[in-house]
Length: 193
Image (cartoon, rainbow, N blue to C red; front, side, top):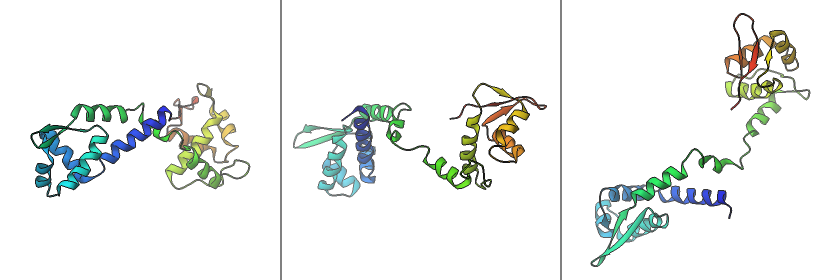
């Protein structure tokens, strides 16, 4: 199993362990103090076998540990483990790995197939802004990043998509795909995220 698959499996196990209301209540109780199965069963109004089942799920991911005390096991929440897991598994660097095999551009392709003809010309302006943004993401690619264009040049380039170049220009600027200098100055492409 590669590192990304292992990460996804660990993330799924972590969320699965916390995806039950009773397990969340157990975590909350153990965050206050260590308790035995019998104490948790009484507090939560559940039977001991149900508590044991939930504790085993939490123990599998390292969130709960047990220590023997007399005739009972006393369970404790591993706050450091919970904090470390949340920080690591939900980090800005790691979480995007979950969607690496997802086709991010599928929605844009669907919109383009709907609103562009076989020559790549816009047949109609969509009413929904999300769909218009997909079209503008496609259109703005004809402009090189870092290069400035006169309004005349912008119109010439946009005319290959639709005769309403004024609307396309206005929408490209208005939705942040391009910027322009005031007073009829140059246009340039913004960084696309």
